[in-house]
Length: 218
Ligand code: AMP
Image (cartoon, rainbow, N blue to C red; front, side, top):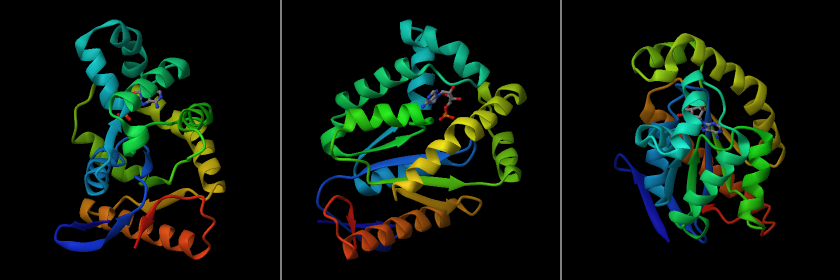
C-alpha cells in the first residue's frame, strides 16, 4: 500500500495492481504538467506521445522523418505507425505490468481499439480529461513556442480534437472510465481535483464492487 501526498497534503493510499491511466485534453490544456505529477504520485510510467514524436523528429531517424510532416502541420500521425510506437514504448518501459499514464494517446476511436487490444483483458482504470476554455488555451499557447502552435496547425489540432477525440471521450464515458475536471484553474488546484476525483471513482467502484477494476484509492 502506498500513501501519497501532493504539496504536503495527504490524498490517500493506493493498493492492489498498478494503475492504467490516460490523460486527455485540447492543445494547451496542461496535459504534460498534470501527467508528470499524477504519474509521479502513482509511480507509473509517464508516456507522452507528443514528446516521443518530437524526440524522434529531432533525432531525424526513419520514424522521425515519417512523422515530421504530420506533426508540423498539426495532423494526426497514421494509426498503424502510432500503434507500433506505443506498443514498443509500453514494452520498453515495462508499463503493461508496471502501470502507465498515457499522455496524448489514444486520440481516436481506432487508437482506443488498438490500445484495448494491446492491454488484453485487464482494461484501463480511468481516463483523465482536462476541460479548458478556448480563452485559456489561447493564453497558454501564446506563452510557449512550439512549431505546431502556429495558427494554421493549431486550428487543425483543435478541429481534430472535436472531430476525432470527442467521440472517443464519449465512448470512455459510456464505459464508466471518464474523470473530467475543470482545467481552467491554477495547476495545483487541478492536480488536487484529479486526485480527489480518482479517489471518488475508486470509492464508487469498491461500493458497487464488480471485481473487474484494479484501481483502489482510499
Ligand atoms: P501533443 O504534444 O500531445 O499535443 O502532440 C503533438 C502532435 O504529435 C500532435 O498534434 C500530432 O501531430 C502528434 N501526435 C501526438 N499524439 C498522437 C496520437 N495519439 N496520434 C496521432 N498523432 C499524435
